[in-house]
Length: 611
Image 1 (tube, rainbow, N blue to C red):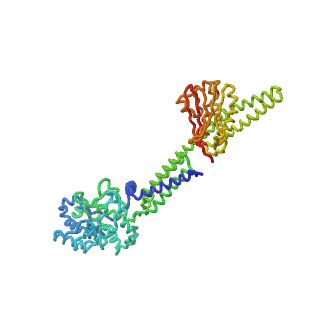
Image 2: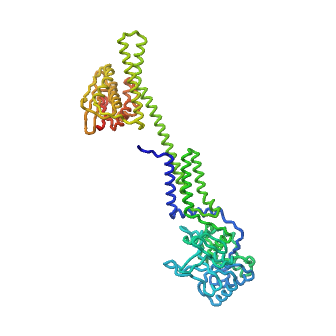
Image 3: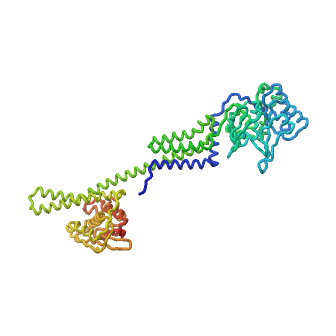
């Protein structure tokens, strides 16, 4: 027995498939780019607004470059600015400038002296790349770094695009480790001795930052609008203007002039204008100093959320129907897409692709299945209704003859005082026709059950001649009225394995049709023979015949040829449809040979399987 998949199981399988596909694709570059775009959008619709975190940008902008000798005068300008800052000393100074090569001896000596007088100094350093990864650190010259801590200044673009969203808190080259410039500035601000680390986090001055070593020690930067970042031009500081703005602050010093800076990167809020690296480090510092941290939830969270979403989609379309199910699925889609925003508001980063893909695949898959499933159920229901209506027409059509005989006989017995012999004859006729009527009803019900797959054929092995003789006896009264001779050419030893009652009905229907539509004083031949293909039972008449178009439509229910309708014979075009159903249920087929005015031959071919 074939087990049918229930709708609930189908929804469950669709949901499981949606979860599997979404999870597999979530590990691809496409999903990573989708996540990037989602969080760039969230950063823009929910920009970071924070109080003064105590950081300010001391910018080597275009004006400073023009007035102080450009790149060549950068160290001299920095020295002058540091000397002015002694009047309003900041708490920490983080310098993101290239100081790896010796310059003019006098200028370097002056800058070294300025560094010595600067408290809380951090100097930037870079990794020196080579084919194997890195060959060492490009540290400031020895005289400069004697008075400062070192922090790396790498602010790399994000994966799959050129947008910076994270900085690396730790970089290792060879046996030397450098913490990020922003993290070293935070250490000095908090007067922490060392930065403590474990495989999963970094601790500085009592602040623990969840950042995994095996993931590269990432820190999500909560960027805010560049216009809200406090900044002062180095030219103003050299001129003694704006010094009080630097007092007690953490000052990040770097190049912001577009013509000079090389480490500009786009950020989610850069608006088409890349951000200087020094400003990225400043915003990373503010993120940590304000404790406004973002933590990644890890790969298990989107997996579980995707499973919950597809499970809900299966539940929705299993128990709800129509617009209620569609609206509920729409709400689920909205919630799945809003989930990253809700988690972001709580300081959590959730991979957005898996839940979003699971919601679309789950909802669309289940909705599509429900739509086509309901349509199929509707078609099945309509077909069932039509079949029952046709069955009613079958019964009404075929019962007319026995009912007429019963009615006529009963009226004769009621109205007239008939001889006992005649009354007995009429009583036997009523009994015979009532039995035939009951048998007919049973036959029709069996055909309906067989067509619906609810009843098995009651096969039996019997002589075909017996069935033909029975049909002959029943068709003789009709043939005698038209003086038509019925001839049988069926061998007595020809046996068949079939449902006797259904086969009898089919042969009788073909035989009576041949008589009804044949001209008077003709003959009808019924023959049968054994072939390699099976047993062929043929009924040939000398009636009006049919053309090819009429033969093509002959087995359609309720179809009658124009000549049949004009002949005056009563019929509904149902009988041949029943014959075809019976033959097909036996694994056979019906062949028709006919031509206008030349009569017709109907051949039933049944497989000769004897079990």
